Amino acid sequence: MVLKSPKAKASPVVPAQRPSAFEAYFEIARRGSTVPKEIRGGLVTFFSMAYIIALNPLIVGTVADANGNLVSGLPASDPVNVGLTIGMVAAATALVAGVLTAAMGLIGRFPVALATGLGLNSVVAYSLAPTMTWPQVMGLIVWEGVLITILVLTGFRKAVFSAVPKPLRTAISVGIGLFICLVGLADAGFVRPGGALVTMGVGGNLLGWPLLVFVVGLGVLVVLFVKRVKGAMLITIAGATILSILVELLVKTGGKADGHDTGWMLNVPAWSADAWGWPDLELLRFWDHVDLVGAFSGGPKVWITLVLTILALMLADFFDSMGTIVAVGQSGGLLKSNGNPPRTQEILLVDSVAAIAGGLFSTSSNTSYIESAAGVEDGARTGLANLVTGLCFILAVFISPIIKLVPSEAVAPVLVLVGFLMLRQVSEIDWADPEVALPAFFMVTLMAFTYSITVGIGVGFLAYLLIKTVRRKWGQVHPLLWVVGGLFLVYFAQGVILEWVA
Image (cartoon, rainbow, N blue to C red; front, side, top):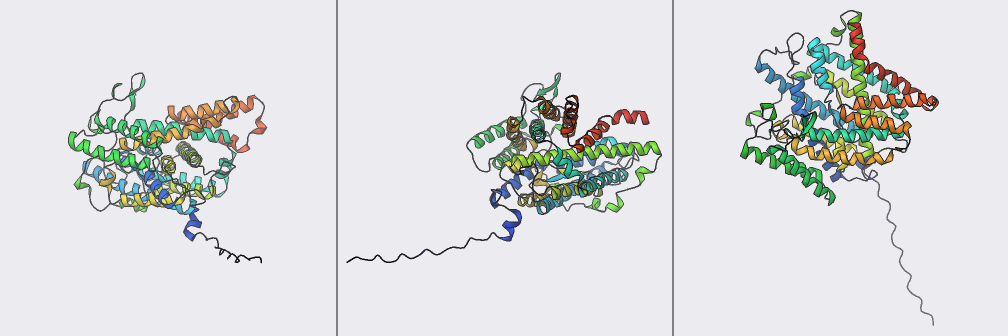
């Protein structure tokens, strides 16, 4: 007799679980991320760029215009007005950055944060404001943003984005890696002007407690990184900040701005009870602080000058953003096979509107921040990280004392490590081919040596066009690159043109 074994029960078929609407919208799992990683990355991005809340007011909020007024409209002759204006600019800087960064997360769904462009704000304050009124200056910023937005809506900006050969895009990312490393070293005071050109520390020596904080923070970060500790960057920032507060409490080093060469480079990590209070949002009343037509009231020579100024601002904003988006996307493996990030049009649109917002609310042009790469390296992959960063900026409007406790020396180690991580892509460039190697070399080196992403990209593009022309391979160049090359020629020749017009 054959015994029949009992029929095995079939395992129930579990239907595939559909992702939630939240997951589907941000594509968190699809991009290899998790909610905790996004939160951590968003926090790292915020702390990496929070310095702009303290730094932008010192640039935009302290310079008098041609009429002797501050950006707030108050006379610059009264020191009390300077203090009030700094508070207004700080509040507007944080609020605008928060809203724009959140908008990038919701619309672009890309982990790149936005805030007032450092460098652009210096041009606005030190070159433009002394020649006209602050409302006129901000009007020019608005027009620059409108022009970039038109280029996005017509598809031109995205087309230029796609027209750049992949090796040059890689070179942009590598160059920005070297640039951001230099930014970190400079923010920590490890590299300073001195000697023949630059020097290490104070007169070639590592002097001062702030430098010690940076060195210790960098050493700890390297150890955590090689041991693959999760959240290494955020742990380093938090730990170095606590160490900085203790050092300042015990030693009272003070800031470099107070005349101490061995002091804290940007902000002093000391608690200030009088910094609490409701933010002054006066600059949000843009109808009182922006003049869209006043700057164009002069003759033809004035118009030529203003057109060149807007062109210079546009090119700087245009290509700084393009380089940043490529670098951040490449750092996180977020670029598609054609080298473009997903939702490129939406990303560029938010970035262009950011310039308009910066002009309207008197903070100077807002743009994408390369410090976002720090958050990406620590796990950020989606727009959810931007919501975290944006919320932090909005909270910073009310809790500026806590933000000021984080000195640049505590964040600088992260920027240095991010520079290293981005430089690793240098192996993807074919250095045996001079047609791409020489332009790539100019891009990588000049971004750092001129402290300008725009200059590095511009010289690299022009070198690429020159080499292709000499080798009679102009047919291999996308037509839009010739247009861009012509614009860069005008950009680099603007000083000569202005001398001729004057």
